[in-house]
Image (cartoon, rainbow, N blue to C red):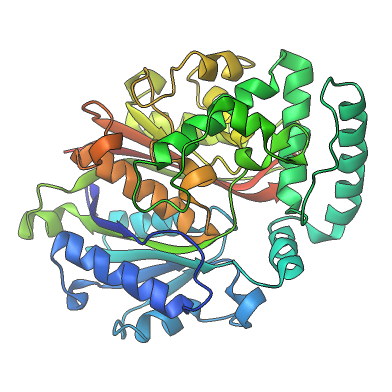
Length: 412
């Protein structure tokens, strides 16, 4: 059994829209980059965990996705575990590799996520996201949420401009409903959501691998067209393609192959969702992760969270224990989560701006945090971070995520 498990190397490609490239190409770029990052050879990789959610929908590649992608890039003869857990697929893959290294089964393993979602068939592209829900009940639920949205808008001061364009995924309706509930219960404002989104966009201008790299003011975010009240387009993650990877290793491997840039995994936790309306999967998972790491919120220096919308970040701030319940809006508005704030959130630009190719997003979070802990983040570098936390949720069951992973990393 390995005493400790480390991130030995990380990589990600620039997220964006790659209509002219195959998923094998994207995965190959991430594979070569992660090997280059830590000066390893393919022959040193003993196993692989491959993350992807949508290739079955778009390419009919329902099975052996990892074997297909990796053998095409010269990595074969090793066991490959294929992982699908909606938006939490990549962090679930990392958790699986961590467990295998921890148990002593392997000393060096690849974790890689690749996704191509952008498609000229917009109806197919947006409809595909429903696969991350209980499809049997989703249609009925969305109709009810739209009625709730119309009711909320009629009571607000916001004028409807009829500017909803081209449709959106079911998850935007779900997030919007949760945001409206939070606004009603705690007084959270649309402007506070815009503060979160503007921060994400401005951080991404310093991230050369982000899908979006343009600044946004709070006013611009609020003036953008409405997706589902209170969410405007600038508050929502874009559709896109990409790949990211990490190599994890045992203490024994690290001793035999010294790497001063390796980062310790202090905690790796995965939790499942519930139909219980009072359940808080993020709070459950983070509590377990804090206990495993022997740390608490006050010990964390930088955070990457699953901000599929601005409300995702605002509410997760509370669930992770960085402020009291209901205070996520004022906490964000205070500047506490900015790059120079007391607890920087999503320095990469988050899903909102870095992009969200579902099967790669969890590893993109790890890439950012490892880069921060190494002190290699350039203009967006957080001041001397030692401990980092990643939160990555996937799919929806009941009123919360179907799967959720927390990783806590430490600079060695």
